Image (tube, one colour):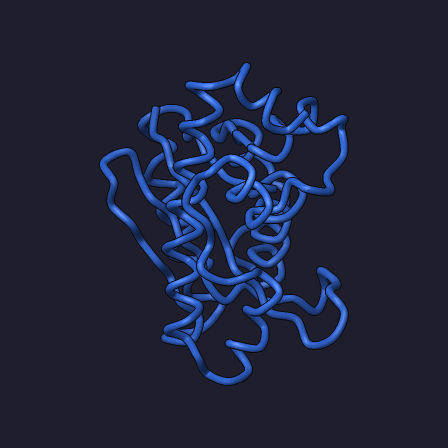
Length: 186
């Protein structure tokens, strides 16, 4: 079994819609603490998606891949599958099969819903880091589009690394302090 903390950053002109959104970065931290950041601005979207897909195919031979993240099930995984299919990296059927047969998705947003009266409001990274006293993302996710438009990739990279730290801290809290979470979020 392999474990990856996974996060993506996306860019859309105007209102977010899956069809007009592109993946601008894929970042993950493995069980050994190695961080990989695939950046669209250094190559292109198809290249980073293909690189990540190839990495998953390699990992699937080791057993299940435990992918850990925040809002993975509603955002990261569906976007990755969609964009990989759009770029013909693999068939939609094969992408779904990879996800369903080889990946266990651990989504902190889903895990925290019962402790927050099943409300999503208040479960964003900035609010959670404040309430749980853990490392916070460097910037708000809403700022990423402006950074991308302005070519401020260093700020996106700061955000990416801080986001991975946030996720790692959040999962540590989930594992170690379940009852404390209920009090903090309740």
